[in-house]
Image (cartoon, rainbow, N blue to C red; front, side, top):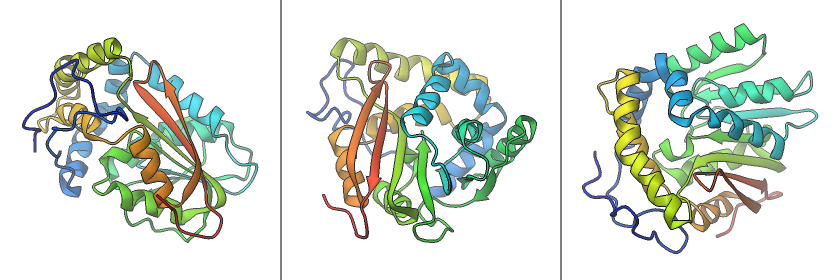
Length: 265
């Protein structure tokens, strides 16, 4: 469940900067992840703002600006959590654009519904597994996922489902943590992620499932850079663009759904 050994701080990652090659697999089984997020749901937003210094809000605004809502049609936010990205899109989308937020953790969705009601935003909240989305093929013009793709047990299967429900020519936007290319920045980032974030996050969230220990482990294990771009293309997207944010501690990946066919590696 917990990685046996992580790379020494400052060790260079593989050439594509995807993370330490010797990090053992993190337990991302559905029941474990669902239970973990259900436990931290009451303080999830508070901890996010605290640990990021509020910069996650700016990252979501950048996502909405670089992958804008369609003029009509629909947006699906997968692994939506408490709905911050869906709400950001709802604030910018034209009237009539359908916005759907899906997550397999009901307590997260419940909090999102309350936030949307307070903000006066119309969003459909759907409890769903990202590997088995209950939507029709080519149903959405834009599919997004923020800090949730690395929580899907099978990344390729999750991306394939996102591609299935994206209209040909539609867009995919992935906002996710990543490992900075700069050795100096990566060293400080990994020290914070391994030593400060887990202790502070677990304490503030008041959880017994070590959710914020899982966070840093899942980030280090998750494929980024060209490895992620290859998975996105294989799922059925093209024109993959990767935009580093805040010195590369997060990356926004934007891609276009291939017209009428499967992806390619």
